[in-house]
Length: 100
Image (cartoon, rainbow, N blue to C red):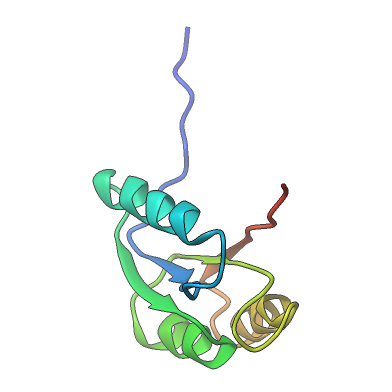
């Protein structure tokens, strides 16, 4: 039986969540898990859409993990996703929706 193969990335951006965000622990756990995997390396953390865009353009990034809500507003992550697609088409993006 063949093993499942998962795509890997050398670099990942994770939008930083402020202390008021109840998902801070989730963010830290995901970042820790990615950094423990040999094929992943978190290269940036950001709180605003501008910081996410700058990180995507300045660092060697393969994948951007983006929350829909950043410090800029509840849907600012979706707006920066469009900007990343336009300015850095080689960066694959994943939107992380939250459910409770």
